[in-house]
Amino acid sequence: MGGSTVPEKAMRMATLLKAQIGVKATEPEYKRLTDFDYVATPKSGSPFLGYEFSRLTQKPLMLHSQDAKYRDANGKSEPLAHFDISFKPESGKSVLIIDDSSTGGRKVGSMIQHLKLLDLVVNYCVVIFEPQSKVGTQQNASKALSEYGVKLISIVRHP
Image 1 (cartoon, rainbow, N blue to C red):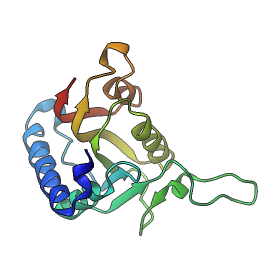
Image 2 (cartoon, rainbow, N blue to C red):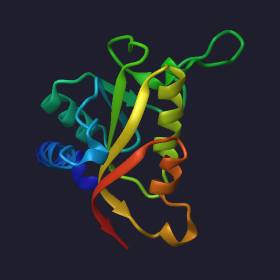
Image 3 (spheres, helix red, strand yellow):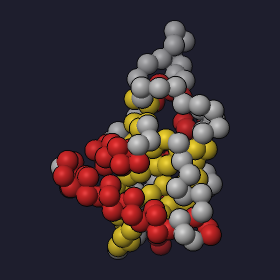
């Protein structure tokens, strides 16, 4: 999915995601899909895609890093230390996770944990591509995210 590092392609992919979200939101199961306050994306995933989607939807971007950017004097980090943001997120607000792909859900799972520690609501993660290589092992992204109460929505599923 390295194509999302090309700005023009990232913008097209973000437009595709926005359109897919609009279609999915008409289904009762996804009625809250368009109701989000922030966009979050993994820094080690596809930050350009998250940025372009954030611009399209005019929602603030939360760029997540699995490693904390700073620690206190005791070596501990707070959840906010895992995000590059220009604002302090408000407790109870909703976050939509955007990424180019998710196979096992490890990166997104880490992000969900940090978002929830900030008292933010996460219901959905939307990706372009969901590889199906781990489905048979029950270690796939959809199953992993469902354990956090997050529904994975993908445009393309492929072996």
